[in-house]
Length: 200
Ligand SMILES: N[C@@H](CCC(=O)N[C@@H](CS)C(=O)NCC(=O)O)C(=O)O
Image 1 (cartoon, rainbow, N blue to C red):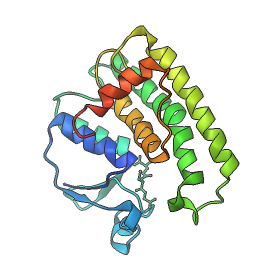
Image 2: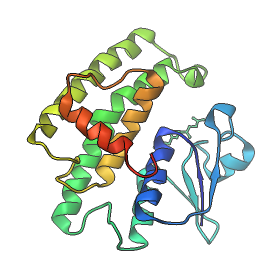
Image 3: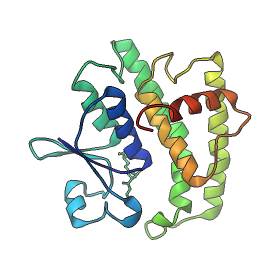
Image 4: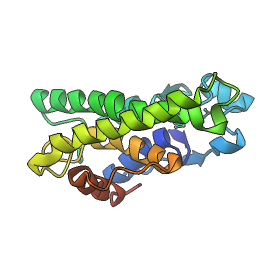
């Protein structure tokens, strides 16, 4: 097994999962900004030219950060990230989708419409990008209400893949220089916990 990853929002998910589970996975780091995911060698691993990619021992490749995390999680029963029973697994799935779609969605789309990396890949619309930052603030405010019950993590008091999914939004927010509003103390509490996790 070999992981191809980067210091990127999606790469971070797998890096954190590996660190949390204490796995030892040989890793090759690719620099996205220097185009290392767009070489013929890497396109043969993933024709979307993205990381993370996990190469399996039979020579096949697994892509998509959450799918890779699920595979790694199933390799042992230590510190399960996807839940211990059917209901817990379903609640974690529910929240992972919410974190991906509602919380990561606007800021990731902002990046596509604002970051130079994407300028030749789509028509960037600056006004749309600005509107996505306002939407992101609304989504953080929604999450703040959800977390106002005082829970440490996204699903109850157990760190899970739902937290890892949300970390992506924090890292893209760093790149966008658009932090979580200071007034959102419950999200701030969650954010501090995330930035203190292994592998961040
Ligand atoms: N849905 C994919 C997204 C992967 C992705 O967008 N990777 C980005 C880094 S966060 C990448 O490798 N980009 C390289 C490029 O666009 O050239 C996942 O979750 O793994």
